[in-house]
Length: 307
Image: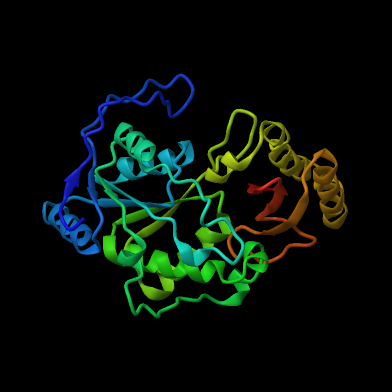
């Protein structure tokens, strides 16, 4: 795979980005590259022409939430670059690395529909070559809470791979979804501390019509579980309403019980934290967001909502 190659998909995927929005005409297929050096060279050529580069890092199994990020990249930049890489270092022992959904052909069809210019498809050895021995860690005050409390080492893997990706692409702006709000906060801290290139932009959560936040892991849900899943967002909205007249602790306890009653198997956390600092809020919730991670079958679902 040491040479450039182009995607020549002929089929058209039946896909729409939003209800009643006409499909975009098929754009020229994006350039597909694997080697980091070729990514850097291609971006340098574009930048020499005065073009701004937008970057969307993904793990594939793309959905409308990812397409919203690509749309933002196209809106604010001249070229949109998307990486597809299932990063092994952010999965812990017993997690779903081997079964994480991989559907690259379909992903590239979607990206063609949404004007992506370049897809970076590295193999593991491109990101972590023989002898790789570096790990990027961020302070426990923002990584040891929420998801980090339940997934040891997860955010070290995220910070390490994002450092590699941003230093390779060197974008003018990179785009991340707010569903993984803690991850977004950590990446902003990482970029500021290490002077990584480009502005880190957060994009609001994209939801199904029934409120379920879009996620690649939603594919794990059985039809019965999928019917239960919208209760997660409904519960967050209920929390926001109930906090107007009741104590934080009382509302959160009842909210967790509601989730378990409707069919969720376990709740990893249900907390209110400040949207800017992730500091825990137990009384005054001004500036807060409610965060939840809960298990439904094999799917660990995340969501958050501004209060």
